[in-house]
Length: 274
Ligand SMILES: Nc1ncnc2c1ncn2[C@@H]1O[C@H](COP(=O)(O)OP(=O)(O)OP(=O)(O)O)[C@@H](O)[C@H]1O
Ligand SMILES: [Mg+2]
Image 1 (cartoon, rainbow, N blue to C red):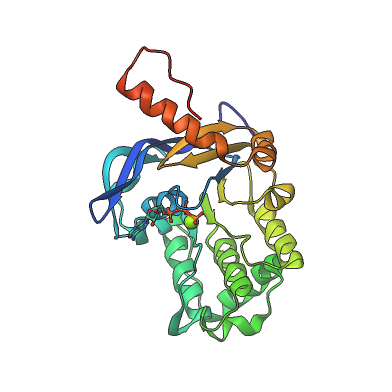
Image 2: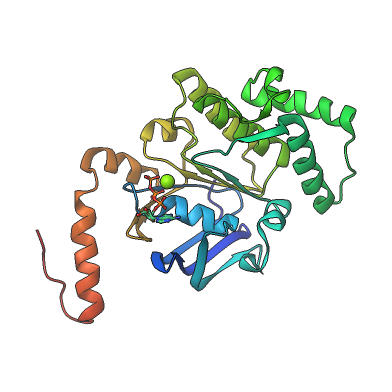
């Protein structure tokens, strides 16, 4: 839902980031308002997961330029745990297994940390079990998964569903879902998409990273962005994703060449390449 006057939840300006001194993000600009659903697409290796991990505060990535405001505050000053507590959620492309840590207990600790930040009371084991059973319904997940270690031995699709269960419990303000559709069977894709739609509200925002229109058939994005070589190269409405299905990414190289030429010879007509 696009409302031009809705509050800006996430404002990313010229964000640059490196891993082991190698620049990956090279000036990302993105503004996300309350109520909006954004999709980020782009070739393998274009920097989509890096963007999500930089936003979540992953220690392997160094921010080398630009800024990120979350509800007007400098997000980059918060450590990863604080970012989660204030309502930023990242559903990982490759969810990590945490052997020896009960999924139920992990979810309870995370939920209570988020609730404390929101000014809500802490939930004891019994109250939390009630809540978690209610939220399990959002992803139609078997309660047996609560008794196992976090993601340990979960199938690919089960891990993705568990990420959405976390999201349903944490009630984030900005949810970034990195390829949540990958590895899901057809029914699971519908269930997960239904869960994401159910959790979306006029007060929060969702950033979907995906390769495929099949997810966007189920979750309609307000804005679609194409990442290439560490920046957002093109943005549009939901029709941009449909266009990509037809055209692929061949145009990306031309546009990158054009940008490079424009950067070096500002003011001159970019040379047609290819
Ligand atoms: N920790 C790291 N060490 C070395 N290189 C990295 C690291 N993280 C990311 N990169 C590199 O940064 C580039 C962008 O990676 P990223 O995972 O963000 O791509 P992506 O757009 O998510 O791709 P995909 O669609 O395949 O998931 C890649 O070339 C990748 O190899
Ligand atoms: Mg990725």
